[in-house]
Amino acid sequence: MHENPSLAGYIEDLIRYDRLGINTFMPATVEQYYPATQTVDVQPALKSTLISPPSTVKRPKLLGIPVMFPKSSGNTIHIPLKKGDGVGLIFCQRSLDDWKAVGGLTSVQDVRLHDLTDAVAIAGLDIVPRTIPESDKMSILVDDGIYIGKPTGTSGAAAGLSQTEVFQALSKLCEIVSSLTTTTVSTGSMTPQGVVNTTGIGTIAASVKTQIETIKAVFDEIGGNSSE
Image (cartoon, rainbow, N blue to C red; front, side):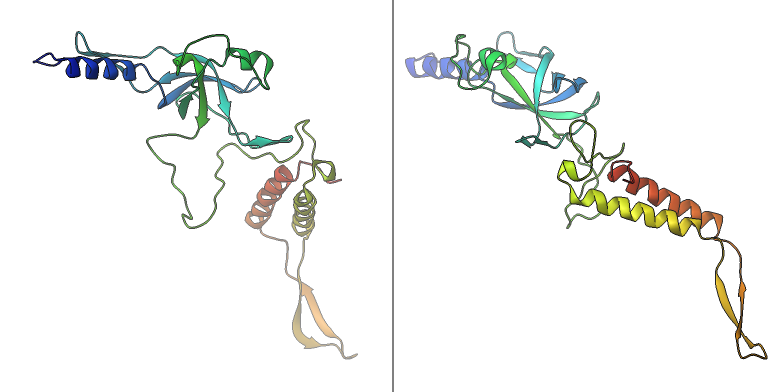
């Protein structure tokens, strides 16, 4: 508060106090993620400041917050979330209750503004950035695998992904190479009939076969685990 109270100082205090109640954006930490509903329980990272007495308190956990993923016309990029992941929270200027219930062009019944309960989470905000191996290139980094296909769990031409067939073909190529057992080379000598002698030099090294099988598994996963 101002040491020399005045009308101007009093108005400034009222404005500041009112602004403290406006929520716009803040970081938060994931407590639990629900893939079926694509909602999340979070703990806001910024404490609330109290004027009198001067102190800070932890904000309440926010439950069932919708998560915003890139999505349109049946196409979705989904990023799985785990406890401890960072997200950013944006707060709707009006209540989201009616919109959550019916969607579309919605009338708003509740009069609350910029409320904590009207948050939407954006995946990816974290104080520690993930290391990017090739910082000058577009990167997709995954720890637990990647899926490309239809929401029903199928892939192929019906998914509208021509690259699916490419990865299936690469998988088949790995299978063929891995099945090769001998390599034939020329000995440099010739038979009396004028034919160059050839001989087999053994099988593909086990370590090479393992690497090929590992590559094949990646192609299988991206291609939808199908060889049709």
